[in-house]
Structures are given as C-alpha cells and as structure tokens.
Image (cartoon, rainbow, N blue to C red; front, side):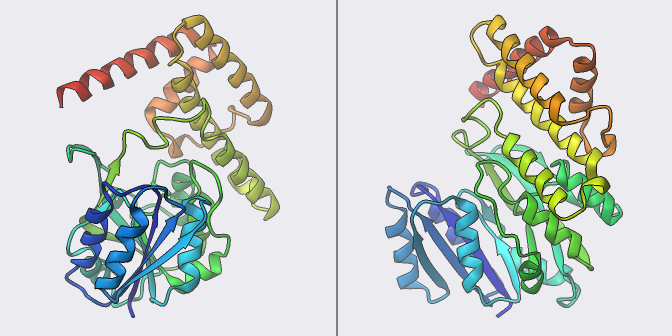
Length: 330
C-alpha cells in the first residue's frame, strides 16, 4: 500500500463529507484512510461509520477527546502505507492529489513532499495561495528556520515517508496552536530528499470558529515554550536561539493583535505592556532571524523598540475593522 491518509475529526458533521469524499474520489486508488473521531458530541461518528461500512479502504477509530495531535498519533500507530498523508476534516483535496504526490516523489525516492496549498474561506473564496514552492531553493537550515516561525507552513500540508515519521518519534503536542510544530521540525531535520508539489492540490479552509478567531490573548505562548524546551533538551538551542526569539516575537505580535480587541484602549494598552514585559524576560529580541519573519512582524518589532504601544493598538483595531467590512462584502 502506497498511502495512509490520516484524518482527525471533532464535531465536523456539517463539513466532514466533503473532506472524506475528496479522499475517496482520488484518481490513484492504492490507499487507506484512517479517520479518528476525537470524542465528537455531534453526528460525526455516525457519518464516519457509514463511510467505513460502504468502503473497505476506510478505517474508523474512536477516542475520548484528547485533541487532533493525539488523534493523529493514534492513526499513525496502525497505518500501513509507505507514505503518510494528512487531511483535516474541514479541508479537501483535488482529485489528483495522490497522483501528483507520487509523480513528484521521483519514483518514491522522496522522504518529504511539501504540498502546494490554497487558503480559503468557508464560502470557497480565496484568501491567498501559500506558494510553498518558493522555498525549494532554500538550504535545509533556512527551511527549518522558516518553518519554525511559521513563515514556511509547519502544518500538515505535507506527505511524509512512514519510516521518517517513525524516526521523528515525538508525535504531536497536546496544545491548541502548533501541535504539529515540533513533529514537523523533527521530520524536516531528518529528511534527506525533499520535493515540492508543482500545482495546487490542497484546499485549507479557514473556519470562522477556528483557533485563530477564539481563545485567550496569547494562543502561541505554549508553542514557543515547548519548542524552546525541546531544543534545550536535545542540545540544539544555541543553533536556533535567534529563530526561537523570532518565533516569540511572532507570538507576541499575535498577542498584541488580540489584546487590541478590548473595548477600551486603556485596557488594551495595559494587556500589551504586561505581555511585552513577560516576553522580554524570556526572549532576547535583539537576537532575531530576520529572514524567518514576515515584514509586518518586523515593523511591529521596530514599534516595540520605541514603545509605541498606542500605534500598535490603533493599527490592530483598523486591521480588524477592515476584516469585518471585507467579510460583509463577500
């Protein structure tokens, strides 16, 4: 068997069928799809079981709610394919996804294949094309640094040889944001032969109720902490200290944006100042990897250096207002 498709599911009854159908309708037929229901309280499990009863390639697993990382770990443990492909329950593939992966894998020589992805809203309108291929000429170190900060996606839009997955060994974290980041780091670090899909074959659907739109003020903080501790434990921190500081800066930038949602500017300023102080105590923003950060984050760094917190709040509020106006027009 060439491919094992891994799909974690939680309360996805309204969108699940499209995702599963996009896998089952692949032009290449040599695969299994392992769908793990992560303790859903809607009708997701019944939908999954129905697909399992109608197609022998579908394997349905159920577990108590433990997060998408644990669900993926569960599925990987029983997978039989030469390659592991990941598909989230709200995303979907082009019909030739697997055929394209097999073609660009150079006769199954590739350890890791990055998937070209389009980011969409729930109504199908395009947010942006991720253009992962632009990273194909980076050195391994440059790829790792860009992926560590999220400039190059650390998410599951990749296909990985199973023996490499097993060597990576760390699995997925039980955190809300970036549960796959350390896993992706370990995979990329070990990959010897890396290729890139040459066309868009993955549709990443940004949900209005996803982790990026709800939660606490600082959703990336646990990720930064986990990544730093992982590198320290493996004696690799010195090699990536500037990149970890860059990841912390990006986390702070997201935190600043969320803090600006407060009704009063005074409350927003207090929250931003307290979080800025906390980050400064743990990370050195004078030592960053500018190549691993986007322009907006670098602008935020310059404003932070000058302690221009009010400008940051106003800019964030304007950004949020423009987003709401855009959504109303769609």
